[in-house]
Length: 300
Image (tube, rainbow, N blue to C red; front, side, top):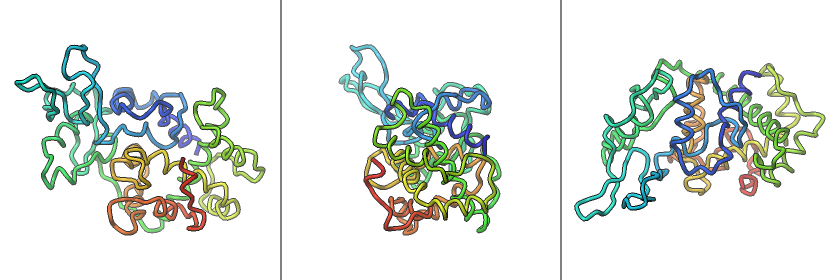
């Protein structure tokens, strides 16, 4: 468990920054050696900065003021160019113009089970497939080269939320302990986490058995309501509409899949109505939160 908590905190990295430039954090994630995790703690416990893998986030290029492309936004995989009338427009980036990968740690795996040299190569390739069935289905699956992911058995699927809930609770507590400058959690969030932190019945972070985690959830159910809502709010960003898309889930899924083989099946199961979106009610149900305890105010 200790290793997992360190991993989750490292992924939090720079989440305290507004999620408007997906390039920044992705560069940190895939250009540094995997063992050199960023020690700073941010607001998002189990994911890299929200927006990093979001294909709809627009990127601002810092170019000369006289360039028509100044502040002209293009989504991931596209670059700004000017036409004959000097009007800026977004065009697909040529994958060959992406910086060469410095190592395997920059590779990413697509849902087509193909390894791409970097996220730049992936999104540039995806752009060229816009308007096609293949392009519509292609998403970034996880960080690292494609590899065999063993099947998630039914009993393993039931165990996944036990660990995830515990991680969310413990990381929120850690954020509360380190939030000396009031920039990791809002005041409202801190008040909610304070109740968890000061509860004498709280199970301390550690390598606990699944049976103990299950008993803890049953006895201290109320401690998990806010962490589950909070994580949904961290992911629901583009747009903030009460639903999670595949792209919004990617910052959480991509780092976890290589280590948690039930990740993909778990989130597929959360989409109970099969509409390709995970509503707050579906998300809460996946983590065992009762219907009467689902509260949209908790994700703000």
